[in-house]
Image 1 (cartoon, rainbow, N blue to C red):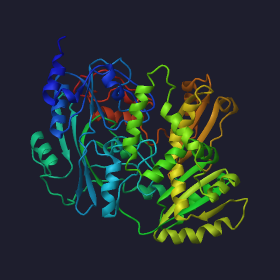
Image 2 (image 1 turned 30 degrees about the horizontal axis):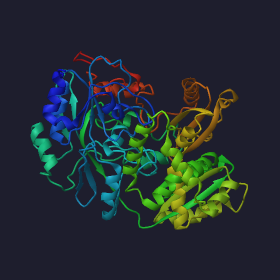
Image 3 (image 1 turned 30 degrees about the vertical axis):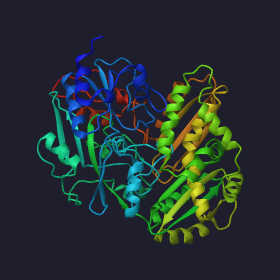
Image 4 (image 1 turned 45 degrees about the vertical axis):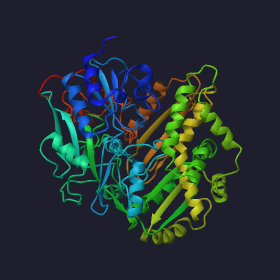
Length: 566
């Protein structure tokens, strides 16, 4: 059988082992983490920045659609093809093999290649007593740094805001259809693409923290967060003030490197576990801490009693794996699990999701893993807040919380966590997202789809607890709420009843959120599941005028744009 000229060029450039074709070999890379899939001519695996550039050039010369992909951990189908209605051949380029991480200065900044993971960033910075802009989430243990920047991903760290930088090296296709490399790293690397990429990959540049008037983090986020009277959310994907070249590009550019700030590690930390049956108690606490405290919290994670219970049962194996094995081994374990599931789910006589069933069964035989005081608070209180303070902020919390609660059990209560209790509280929250998915997987015969929303409420919102109309609540088996409380960003997972139309429920949910002035998605980006707001759509068109990269995201058009004036 004759081979297409495009594939021959890819193979000549990369070698046969780095060019995957055929439905079976490419299936994993054409399918989203939770949902979505599409067709592709090939999946490429370049292992150098220069070969990535050359592969991009072949795609542009042959009028191909380009979908950039790293760890493929997104929840909104944004890093995989969507359907088979594209007007050109689709080529997926996976960047995970290019995972260098360069420490700049004494660790004040880092330079990340396109496939470098958050996990590698955390482990690299740890001995330097520096911390990253974001921390690993439970659903994305292998998430890439560039993927986070490209999607304005948020996280649990109160002071740092979404992943953001104005310092990046990227390729884009101009309105005239020409591929060009743009070096906005503020690091001298040469003039031509070959010079720039070769010097970067070989480390032939100044590793000092070179001066720049551009931001390498969302440095104004704390100030924005403190404005508790603002009638808008603190962070959300369509925020035009956070859209800058690579930041928020959603794969509409090919990003080769980003430069990011790191942060000093706190000398001391203390966790406070808070419970209440009155959501207004947490509203008043949040507003006071943000507006009046000199030192903001490090973390403030909310968890409702219902997801507490789901995580306790269906996230137990994740909890114990992290506790006893650490996060170093988990990315490989999750990758292995995914490969095993992909094979076993195609065997007719093997139950679907066999690995999940086995892990759930084993964890059920093990003894209780949560500390007694957390379980006592679960019995007493519906709403839980895990508050971590650092350094001088610890004394502020220790002075404020006893006065605030005043030993009034009707208002709520708190306790200062031991080291074990603190670790358990955050591990429990860590396991919550995966636990919701596990529950739905293991009860597919009794329940319907899972609908996962991440929403940003207005900073001045007092009534943050959702109140669904009875007609909608009757369609839901479980409503599970958890999130980043001080940012007012919530993850809301709904396990629907059997036979309920998830699209209809989602549309009704979004209408309610619109009426509340909420924004969505807050930190997982639009992908192929949400319509891009006007400002976000204009940004996509500006940085990718020919619609070569990732067409269709934000429910926008998939066809090529040919005019040079758009």
